Length: 328
Ligand code: ADP
Image (cartoon, rainbow, N blue to C red; front, side, top):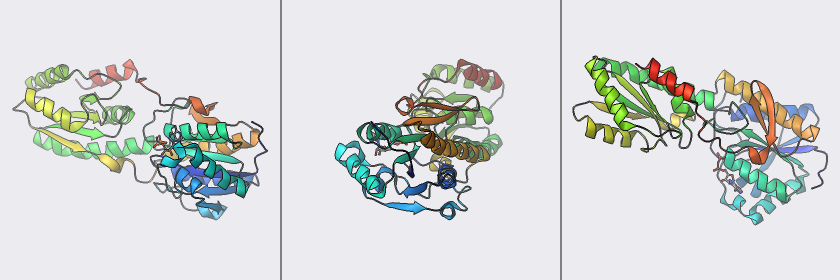
Protein backbone atom coordinates (compact mmCIF):
# COMPACT_ATOMS: atom_id res chain seq x y z
CA UNK A 1 0.00 0.00 0.00
CA UNK A 2 1.36 3.46 -0.89
CA UNK A 3 2.01 5.50 2.26
CA UNK A 4 2.40 9.24 2.58
CA UNK A 5 5.25 10.78 4.53
CA UNK A 6 4.18 10.97 8.16
CA UNK A 7 3.29 14.51 9.27
CA UNK A 8 0.51 14.05 11.83
CA UNK A 9 0.39 11.19 14.27
CA UNK A 10 -2.14 9.74 16.66
CA UNK A 11 -1.40 7.97 19.92
CA UNK A 12 -3.71 5.71 21.92
CA UNK A 13 -3.63 3.28 24.84
CA UNK A 14 -5.72 0.13 24.48
CA UNK A 15 -6.62 -3.07 26.34
CA UNK A 16 -5.49 -3.56 29.93
CA UNK A 17 -3.83 -0.52 31.51
CA UNK A 18 -0.34 -0.68 32.96
CA UNK A 19 1.79 1.69 35.00
CA UNK A 20 4.16 3.59 32.71
CA UNK A 21 1.69 4.11 29.87
CA UNK A 22 1.69 7.83 30.71
CA UNK A 23 5.46 7.99 30.39
CA UNK A 24 5.13 6.43 26.93
CA UNK A 25 2.41 8.90 25.88
CA UNK A 26 4.60 11.76 27.07
CA UNK A 27 7.54 10.46 25.04
CA UNK A 28 5.47 10.06 21.87
CA UNK A 29 3.95 13.53 22.20
CA UNK A 30 7.21 15.33 22.95
CA UNK A 31 9.27 13.46 20.33
CA UNK A 32 6.59 14.17 17.74
CA UNK A 33 6.48 17.86 18.61
CA UNK A 34 10.29 18.03 18.61
CA UNK A 35 10.21 16.82 14.99
CA UNK A 36 7.49 19.31 14.02
CA UNK A 37 4.68 16.73 13.86
CA UNK A 38 1.13 17.36 14.96
CA UNK A 39 0.26 14.85 17.68
CA UNK A 40 -3.34 13.77 18.35
CA UNK A 41 -4.33 11.98 21.55
CA UNK A 42 -7.06 9.40 20.97
CA UNK A 43 -9.23 8.73 24.04
CA UNK A 44 -10.27 5.23 25.21
CA UNK A 45 -8.28 3.27 22.65
CA UNK A 46 -10.09 2.12 19.52
CA UNK A 47 -13.41 3.23 21.03
CA UNK A 48 -12.36 6.89 20.90
CA UNK A 49 -10.93 6.37 17.43
CA UNK A 50 -14.32 5.20 16.18
CA UNK A 51 -16.22 7.90 18.10
CA UNK A 52 -13.80 10.63 17.01
CA UNK A 53 -12.92 11.38 20.62
CA UNK A 54 -9.58 12.85 19.63
CA UNK A 55 -7.70 15.91 20.82
CA UNK A 56 -4.66 17.81 19.69
CA UNK A 57 -1.83 17.40 22.16
CA UNK A 58 0.69 20.01 23.15
CA UNK A 59 3.89 19.64 25.07
CA UNK A 60 2.06 20.92 28.17
CA UNK A 61 -0.73 18.33 27.76
CA UNK A 62 1.71 15.71 29.04
CA UNK A 63 3.29 17.78 31.81
CA UNK A 64 3.52 16.16 35.22
CA UNK A 65 2.29 12.72 34.13
CA UNK A 66 5.50 10.68 33.99
CA UNK A 67 5.05 9.60 37.62
CA UNK A 68 1.33 8.78 37.36
CA UNK A 69 -0.12 5.27 36.98
CA UNK A 70 -3.05 4.53 34.65
CA UNK A 71 -3.31 6.44 31.38
CA UNK A 72 -4.44 10.03 30.78
CA UNK A 73 -5.84 8.91 27.42
CA UNK A 74 -7.90 6.22 29.19
CA UNK A 75 -8.22 2.75 27.75
CA UNK A 76 -11.02 0.48 26.69
CA UNK A 77 -11.93 -2.75 25.02
CA UNK A 78 -13.85 -2.09 21.82
CA UNK A 79 -16.08 -4.66 20.13
CA UNK A 80 -16.72 -2.51 17.06
CA UNK A 81 -13.06 -2.57 16.12
CA UNK A 82 -13.30 -6.30 15.45
CA UNK A 83 -15.56 -5.42 12.50
CA UNK A 84 -14.42 -3.85 9.24
CA UNK A 85 -17.15 -1.19 9.49
CA UNK A 86 -15.83 -0.08 12.89
CA UNK A 87 -12.24 0.13 11.68
CA UNK A 88 -13.39 2.09 8.62
CA UNK A 89 -15.10 4.67 10.84
CA UNK A 90 -11.84 5.04 12.75
CA UNK A 91 -9.90 5.44 9.51
CA UNK A 92 -12.27 8.12 8.25
CA UNK A 93 -11.89 10.10 11.48
CA UNK A 94 -8.11 10.03 11.14
CA UNK A 95 -8.24 10.87 7.43
CA UNK A 96 -10.41 13.91 8.08
CA UNK A 97 -7.82 15.22 10.52
CA UNK A 98 -4.95 14.35 8.22
CA UNK A 99 -3.45 11.91 10.73
CA UNK A 100 -1.18 9.56 8.79
CA UNK A 101 0.64 7.55 11.46
CA UNK A 102 -0.48 5.76 14.65
CA UNK A 103 1.26 4.64 17.83
CA UNK A 104 -0.57 1.94 19.77
CA UNK A 105 0.39 1.30 23.38
CA UNK A 106 -1.21 -1.96 24.53
CA UNK A 107 -1.06 -5.73 24.57
CA UNK A 108 -1.15 -8.40 21.88
CA UNK A 109 -4.91 -7.97 21.37
CA UNK A 110 -4.42 -4.30 20.56
CA UNK A 111 -1.64 -5.23 18.13
CA UNK A 112 -3.91 -7.73 16.37
CA UNK A 113 -6.38 -4.88 15.85
CA UNK A 114 -3.60 -2.64 14.55
CA UNK A 115 -2.33 -5.30 12.14
CA UNK A 116 -5.80 -5.71 10.70
CA UNK A 117 -6.23 -1.93 10.43
CA UNK A 118 -2.88 -1.42 8.71
CA UNK A 119 -3.68 -4.13 6.13
CA UNK A 120 -6.90 -2.40 5.19
CA UNK A 121 -5.91 1.27 5.27
CA UNK A 122 -2.98 3.46 4.34
CA UNK A 123 -2.08 4.52 7.89
CA UNK A 124 1.02 2.84 9.31
CA UNK A 125 0.93 1.60 12.92
CA UNK A 126 3.66 1.14 15.49
CA UNK A 127 3.11 -1.04 18.57
CA UNK A 128 4.61 -0.61 22.03
CA UNK A 129 4.02 -3.24 24.73
CA UNK A 130 2.10 -1.76 27.63
CA UNK A 131 1.18 -4.78 29.74
CA UNK A 132 2.07 -5.98 33.22
CA UNK A 133 2.44 -9.58 32.01
CA UNK A 134 5.82 -9.35 30.19
CA UNK A 135 4.68 -11.97 27.73
CA UNK A 136 5.14 -10.41 24.29
CA UNK A 137 7.64 -11.82 21.80
CA UNK A 138 10.40 -9.48 20.66
CA UNK A 139 11.04 -7.66 23.91
CA UNK A 140 12.69 -8.36 27.25
CA UNK A 141 10.53 -5.72 28.92
CA UNK A 142 6.95 -4.60 28.75
CA UNK A 143 5.82 -1.32 30.25
CA UNK A 144 4.30 -1.95 33.70
CA UNK A 145 5.82 -5.32 34.54
CA UNK A 146 8.53 -3.97 36.81
CA UNK A 147 6.08 -1.84 38.78
CA UNK A 148 3.57 -4.69 39.12
CA UNK A 149 6.19 -7.11 40.32
CA UNK A 150 7.56 -4.61 42.84
CA UNK A 151 4.05 -4.00 44.15
CA UNK A 152 3.61 -7.76 44.54
CA UNK A 153 6.95 -8.06 46.36
CA UNK A 154 6.07 -5.27 48.78
CA UNK A 155 2.71 -6.87 49.56
CA UNK A 156 4.13 -10.39 49.93
CA UNK A 157 6.83 -9.11 52.32
CA UNK A 158 4.07 -7.75 54.53
CA UNK A 159 2.11 -11.00 54.46
CA UNK A 160 5.31 -12.86 55.29
CA UNK A 161 5.69 -10.92 58.54
CA UNK A 162 2.32 -12.08 59.83
CA UNK A 163 2.81 -15.55 58.38
CA UNK A 164 6.07 -15.84 60.28
CA UNK A 165 4.46 -14.72 63.52
CA UNK A 166 1.87 -17.50 63.28
CA UNK A 167 3.75 -20.37 61.61
CA UNK A 168 1.35 -20.66 58.74
CA UNK A 169 1.25 -21.79 55.16
CA UNK A 170 0.27 -18.89 52.98
CA UNK A 171 -0.85 -19.05 49.36
CA UNK A 172 -0.60 -15.71 47.63
CA UNK A 173 -2.20 -15.21 44.26
CA UNK A 174 -0.69 -12.70 41.86
CA UNK A 175 -1.87 -11.63 38.41
CA UNK A 176 -1.04 -13.68 35.32
CA UNK A 177 -3.80 -15.51 33.50
CA UNK A 178 -1.55 -16.83 30.75
CA UNK A 179 1.90 -15.81 31.95
CA UNK A 180 3.76 -16.67 35.13
CA UNK A 181 6.40 -13.95 35.11
CA UNK A 182 4.88 -11.88 37.93
CA UNK A 183 4.58 -15.03 40.06
CA UNK A 184 8.07 -16.23 39.20
CA UNK A 185 9.84 -12.92 39.79
CA UNK A 186 7.91 -11.93 42.91
CA UNK A 187 8.15 -15.47 44.28
CA UNK A 188 11.91 -15.67 43.89
CA UNK A 189 12.35 -12.16 45.29
CA UNK A 190 10.35 -13.00 48.42
CA UNK A 191 11.85 -16.45 49.00
CA UNK A 192 8.74 -18.46 48.13
CA UNK A 193 8.95 -22.19 48.75
CA UNK A 194 6.77 -22.99 45.75
CA UNK A 195 5.77 -21.03 42.67
CA UNK A 196 2.84 -22.19 40.55
CA UNK A 197 2.61 -20.82 37.02
CA UNK A 198 0.51 -21.47 33.91
CA UNK A 199 3.56 -22.47 31.87
CA UNK A 200 4.25 -25.55 33.98
CA UNK A 201 2.24 -28.46 35.17
CA UNK A 202 1.95 -28.44 38.96
CA UNK A 203 2.90 -31.60 40.78
CA UNK A 204 0.68 -31.20 43.85
CA UNK A 205 1.91 -34.43 45.45
CA UNK A 206 5.43 -33.13 45.29
CA UNK A 207 4.32 -29.88 46.98
CA UNK A 208 2.55 -31.85 49.72
CA UNK A 209 5.65 -33.98 50.17
CA UNK A 210 7.87 -30.89 50.46
CA UNK A 211 5.49 -29.33 53.03
CA UNK A 212 5.54 -32.53 55.11
CA UNK A 213 9.29 -32.75 54.86
CA UNK A 214 9.63 -29.13 55.97
CA UNK A 215 7.27 -29.77 58.85
CA UNK A 216 9.52 -32.62 59.97
CA UNK A 217 12.41 -30.18 59.95
CA UNK A 218 10.28 -27.67 61.91
CA UNK A 219 10.21 -25.27 59.00
CA UNK A 220 6.63 -24.33 59.56
CA UNK A 221 6.36 -21.17 57.57
CA UNK A 222 5.70 -21.79 53.92
CA UNK A 223 4.99 -19.34 51.19
CA UNK A 224 3.38 -20.46 47.95
CA UNK A 225 3.01 -17.91 45.17
CA UNK A 226 0.39 -18.79 42.58
CA UNK A 227 -0.37 -17.10 39.26
CA UNK A 228 -4.13 -16.71 38.76
CA UNK A 229 -3.95 -18.93 35.67
CA UNK A 230 -2.00 -21.90 37.08
CA UNK A 231 -3.34 -25.44 36.36
CA UNK A 232 -5.58 -25.34 39.41
CA UNK A 233 -7.02 -21.91 38.68
CA UNK A 234 -5.60 -19.74 41.46
CA UNK A 235 -5.21 -19.63 45.23
CA UNK A 236 -8.72 -20.78 46.21
CA UNK A 237 -8.42 -23.99 44.25
CA UNK A 238 -4.88 -24.70 45.46
CA UNK A 239 -5.97 -24.15 49.07
CA UNK A 240 -8.83 -26.60 48.62
CA UNK A 241 -6.59 -29.33 47.25
CA UNK A 242 -3.92 -28.82 49.92
CA UNK A 243 -6.51 -28.85 52.72
CA UNK A 244 -7.75 -32.22 51.55
CA UNK A 245 -4.25 -33.61 51.66
CA UNK A 246 -3.09 -31.81 54.81
CA UNK A 247 -6.21 -31.47 57.01
CA UNK A 248 -4.23 -30.38 60.08
CA UNK A 249 -2.33 -27.56 58.40
CA UNK A 250 -3.36 -23.94 58.79
CA UNK A 251 -3.47 -22.63 55.24
CA UNK A 252 -4.40 -19.04 54.48
CA UNK A 253 -4.78 -17.30 51.16
CA UNK A 254 -4.33 -13.75 50.00
CA UNK A 255 -5.32 -12.55 46.52
CA UNK A 256 -3.45 -9.39 45.59
CA UNK A 257 -5.70 -8.43 42.67
CA UNK A 258 -5.81 -5.01 41.08
CA UNK A 259 -3.34 -3.26 43.35
CA UNK A 260 -0.76 -4.80 41.01
CA UNK A 261 -1.95 -2.69 38.08
CA UNK A 262 -1.93 0.68 39.76
CA UNK A 263 0.51 3.02 41.38
CA UNK A 264 3.34 5.21 40.35
CA UNK A 265 5.55 3.51 37.73
CA UNK A 266 9.01 2.31 38.78
CA UNK A 267 12.12 3.97 37.43
CA UNK A 268 12.66 1.07 35.00
CA UNK A 269 9.13 1.35 33.63
CA UNK A 270 9.52 5.10 33.12
CA UNK A 271 12.83 4.54 31.34
CA UNK A 272 11.65 1.84 28.97
CA UNK A 273 8.41 3.70 28.27
CA UNK A 274 10.38 6.86 27.41
CA UNK A 275 12.78 4.92 25.21
CA UNK A 276 10.10 2.95 23.37
CA UNK A 277 7.90 6.03 22.96
CA UNK A 278 10.78 8.02 21.50
CA UNK A 279 11.75 5.25 19.07
CA UNK A 280 8.18 4.64 17.95
CA UNK A 281 8.06 8.17 16.52
CA UNK A 282 11.56 7.88 15.05
CA UNK A 283 10.40 4.70 13.29
CA UNK A 284 7.43 6.43 11.72
CA UNK A 285 9.72 9.22 10.49
CA UNK A 286 12.24 6.73 9.08
CA UNK A 287 9.51 4.87 7.20
CA UNK A 288 9.71 1.70 9.32
CA UNK A 289 6.02 0.94 9.19
CA UNK A 290 3.79 -1.59 10.94
CA UNK A 291 6.40 -2.76 13.36
CA UNK A 292 6.68 -3.50 17.03
CA UNK A 293 9.23 -1.57 19.05
CA UNK A 294 10.84 -3.73 21.73
CA UNK A 295 14.06 -3.85 23.69
CA UNK A 296 16.27 -6.93 23.65
CA UNK A 297 19.67 -7.24 25.29
CA UNK A 298 19.45 -3.52 25.99
CA UNK A 299 19.15 -2.68 22.27
CA UNK A 300 16.12 -1.57 20.36
CA UNK A 301 14.53 -4.50 18.57
CA UNK A 302 12.10 -4.05 15.69
CA UNK A 303 9.93 -6.89 14.45
CA UNK A 304 6.87 -6.93 12.18
CA UNK A 305 3.83 -6.00 14.26
CA UNK A 306 2.09 -9.27 13.35
CA UNK A 307 4.93 -11.19 15.05
CA UNK A 308 4.43 -9.39 18.37
CA UNK A 309 2.25 -12.13 19.80
CA UNK A 310 2.08 -13.70 23.22
CA UNK A 311 5.26 -15.43 24.25
CA UNK A 312 4.05 -18.76 25.54
CA UNK A 313 5.82 -21.34 27.66
CA UNK A 314 9.28 -19.87 27.67
CA UNK A 315 10.10 -19.88 31.37
CA UNK A 316 13.52 -21.43 31.70
CA UNK A 317 14.42 -24.56 33.61
CA UNK A 318 17.24 -22.60 35.24
CA UNK A 319 14.77 -20.40 37.13
CA UNK A 320 12.76 -23.37 38.35
CA UNK A 321 15.93 -25.06 39.58
CA UNK A 322 16.93 -21.89 41.44
CA UNK A 323 13.49 -21.75 43.12
CA UNK A 324 13.85 -25.35 44.30
CA UNK A 325 17.38 -25.03 45.64
CA UNK A 326 16.93 -21.69 47.35
CA UNK A 327 13.71 -22.70 49.07
CA UNK A 328 15.13 -25.74 50.84
P1 ADP B 1 -4.69 -6.22 25.15
O1 ADP B 1 -4.27 -5.25 24.11
O2 ADP B 1 -4.34 -5.75 26.53
O3 ADP B 1 -4.21 -7.63 24.83
P2 ADP B 1 -7.43 -6.95 24.32
O4 ADP B 1 -7.06 -8.33 23.91
O5 ADP B 1 -8.67 -6.75 25.10
O6 ADP B 1 -6.28 -6.24 25.19
O7 ADP B 1 -7.52 -6.06 22.99
C1 ADP B 1 -7.81 -4.68 23.05
C2 ADP B 1 -8.69 -4.28 21.89
O8 ADP B 1 -7.99 -4.51 20.65
C3 ADP B 1 -9.98 -5.05 21.73
O9 ADP B 1 -11.00 -4.61 22.60
C4 ADP B 1 -10.33 -4.75 20.28
O10 ADP B 1 -10.87 -3.47 20.15
C5 ADP B 1 -8.94 -4.77 19.62
N1 ADP B 1 -8.68 -6.09 19.03
C6 ADP B 1 -8.19 -7.19 19.64
N2 ADP B 1 -8.10 -8.23 18.77
C7 ADP B 1 -8.54 -7.77 17.58
C8 ADP B 1 -8.72 -8.35 16.28
N3 ADP B 1 -8.41 -9.61 16.05
N4 ADP B 1 -9.22 -7.55 15.31
C9 ADP B 1 -9.54 -6.28 15.54
N5 ADP B 1 -9.41 -5.68 16.73
C10 ADP B 1 -8.92 -6.40 17.74
